[in-house]
Length: 553
Image (cartoon, helix red, strand yellow):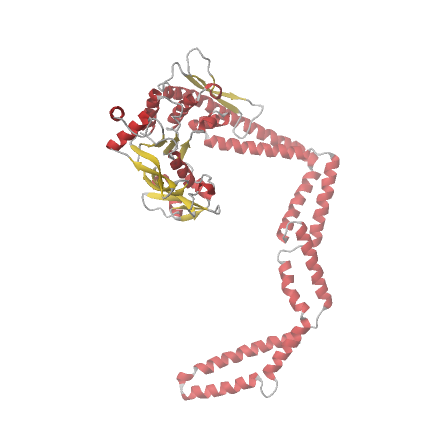
């Protein structure tokens, strides 16, 4: 459940903080007051796209934070985001450079992660959803939600992918003889180049490490000889002076055992110098520069570089490609023998997909009858005459897809004597609003989403029907939290909580504010909505109070 929403510098919202509770919450205000901005800010917090032009003029960034009951999180999410209390926060920011940042309970996440974790927290139903509801794909999706078909749909999608892959392999096996020969020549040439290169992972790095010593062999021998001579030759040889210092330090330690540390350190230095001298001597007395070996390594380095540049960018990638090429060559060489095997694989995949499509159809067909009756019972009281509603499901076995082989169509007739026709062809805006509300009411028991948001879905609905729509929303809110942006007093009167949204001027700028209204203030807002003006008359106030009393009763 949504517990609160804080919005800052979002469009003309300078800053609002809204608490939410269970039941039905409505937002009202004059046309253009910014009621829908609250819904858009909530969508932004949960990962919806937004442009930098939405940032309030003069602000550096916009942000929105939504707080939800932690009961909706699973144990894995609780652990990852260190959720220990009764709620967790989701926050999103967007700055003037278009950089977006998102956080769950203070932990940074990507926007895609934000959307994944927040999926299922809120279900938005906007003014434009009427267009979505008219699409057959959306109608099929609603039917599947009602039928709880997600697991069967996953199996069907997997089977469809396997069938497509099997058909693709079968088609590839039926290449013309000329095309097979061409591919065999190409793959054979590529494999030969990689094999001839005799690539070994790590070899390029080894060559890079060896080249400096080979290129500078003479200079290395001269320097090592000079360093060794400085240690051991002449009156000022470092080894002789260090020996004298060691003897003096040992005498010092003999006089006072507490002064033995210098002798220990000098002894360590002698050991290190002897080890260094040994390595210098080995380098000095080592083999002379070998121009042949240097040329060999440079040539090998060039061959490796050209090969991996051509075949993947690394030795590992080129060797992996070689394995792929071998498999392709084997497939082409055995294509005639394998065609029968591939035909069987494709036929088995087709059979599996067909069986799953049949199962899906049976479930959809049974669910369509139940959904038809349930939606009809929900919309019949919403101001229709002899309304009819049904869900048609037809199966076309010849063209299955990832969602099966069915096509769903919502059929509707608002009046007696009219045949039921596709909803998209005959429903007006107001009728579509009521049908959609009925569908949401029917699906509310099957959905796991706890919060439903309706943004002026009562558009095109009149007063009497509006009251029925409000009553329907109130009933849905008994099992789900419902937020509704509305222009109808007959809807607003059913609310458990009521926010009035207004637009004012502050320091030469337009600012949107939202404040909770109760008691007389709420009656005044309902009266304003009834009268269609900013001022409520005494008659309007009386009517508003009566409406509130009736809806509360």
